[in-house]
Image (cartoon, rainbow, N blue to C red):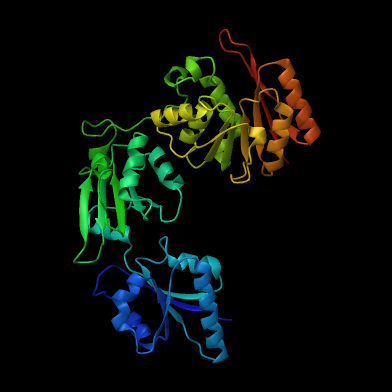
Length: 422
């Protein structure tokens, strides 16, 4: 069955402009699709008797209707396209991408409009060639957090009704990223409702915003090019992420400064984990959260999931991740051996920082979910734990790598051990 789509991008204007070729396609069309807002705007342009398929969730129902339409066209030997109206540029986090994913062989003809972030930048006359674009429309915080951690100078954000400008500003303030100015565009393209405001995160967190909207975050408002070079008198203060956070800067478990993976050990552990080439990192027995936080800051692409048996670990992780600007770490409290890990992404890198005398069982449970080519790193503090890890790795058929032995001041020597799953 042949799937032909014509996808026409549009803004929120009640008198939309379409190229002549797109208008001709609309006049000759028979079946149309789009959101209800799109139908309200283009309804008077549709030919008499036009059929409309609303795009609503779940999308499975929408695509089932599309299949019915194309089957009908095929039965009638009619080479008809299905005409879809979409917001802005349909290839920019848009519905054309959804069609390409679900129907990769579909024939698509596009008539794009400016996307909402382009329109906002145009209204503000702000260059956007250096803008990091992030969609929070039905998506988690991961890429937004990554843009903050990487200090993207300009971030364009697509929102939804859960990820609003107020909740976005609240997350920025929670993790110390208050140096951005927020430009909020509401109902862009609608002459009766369009509104653009410039606010600080402190102002936006208490704001009331109408949907649809989008955001442009600028860390150097009013400054361009060399005016915003680091070290200039006008450059804003930006949170720093030292490579190897000093141990004393962390909040500690019951004030016990020894209960932390020390900075030199921490960095050697991260080196052994090779997190630059992995995607999902599990930190088991995180205690203060030092390894998780260091990993999140140095490798912001990572999905970090951290486990700790002590209930007070949750508060420690919350405190330290906010202190160092490390959003997006998933914290799981409870006995790891009794925890159902199926809801979490399978790891390709795991650090066992605490085992409570159950190292063999813990290693076996990790091996069952570890992705092929993934690794386990364990820091042994005794001959007994070293032998237990070596024995379990040998029994499980994993590959044990040469270890690194290090001694810090008056502390006992630590052996950094690594095994990989072939």
